[in-house]
Image (cartoon, rainbow, N blue to C red; front, side, top):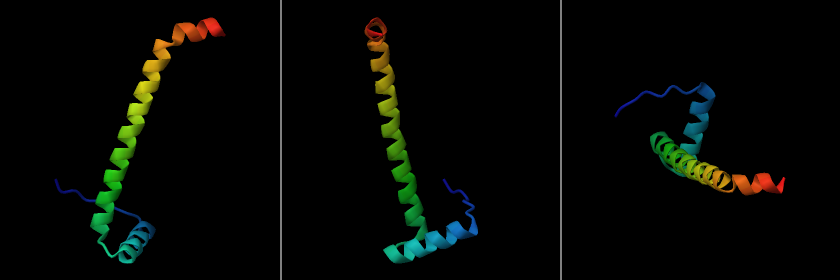
Amino acid sequence: MAMNLRLRDDQTEALKLRAEQEGTSMHALLLRAVDDYLARTAQQAIVRQTARAQAAKWYELMERLK
């Protein structure tokens, strides 16, 4: 799917500089950034889900220990 992305001028310049430093394209950097974000937030969601499940499992015991 094609999409447009509007960056601020300072973001565009920083991205262009980083792409040049890494010898890659701005497009490739943005794709990598999206992949990194999706992987990181997926892991965070798993941790939150696990924490909620454990909190529910041990709720009664924790209440008795107060």
